[in-house]
Length: 261
Image (cartoon, rainbow, N blue to C red; front, side, top):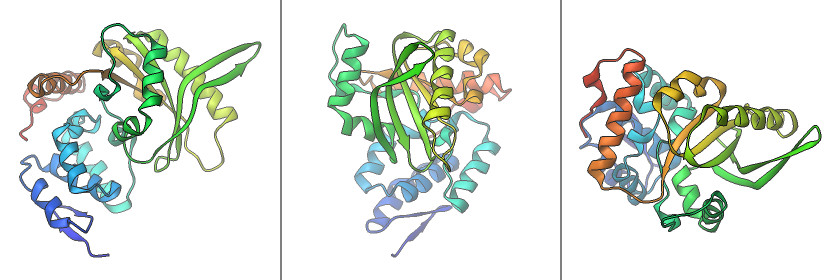
């Protein structure tokens, strides 16, 4: 297969030059490398690439919130070994406007809408996610628990447990997710697989709460979701503010949060 060398990565063919023309105008070199490598790994069409850029995929990843040197190292590993990290896979926020939810709805309504629009939900989650179960029954002692959604990520080789929360994230949500992950590791994890990963999808969160419980160190990701797509300038403002807060927590300069497109 013919490949077109682009920036520090390669882009899939056919349409390689069309991919290149979309990426070359991105001024931030790390952002440009991210799209080049992810396009190669996940074999996006030119239309998919344009949609990812328009949807601010890079800005919604945890990778974009890391110090520049760490980003360079992770992108280098991706380029040389085709190895993805959870920080490249999971997003914050997730845009679920395609679910068609209006005004008041319950967690069951949200779950049902996701399953009804499963194909589009998988597109928003990202390549390599496979649906496993809904309301997965976890029997522990004399009590049954039910996990909202269970997926498997082929490239990460890990089960991904998803809990849906209509309200703001609370630290107690972490304990619930940790219980689910330990159960999955003991009873569902197969030889050769990585430890299960948890994703808590909530309506809102406080960055200080998230930092204090240090979710990423426990194999738990936490992301907000939006059932309506906000105007682009509001989404950009929200993402820039999130980057600023995270980088301040790790001692990065304030002005490092804003990147040129």
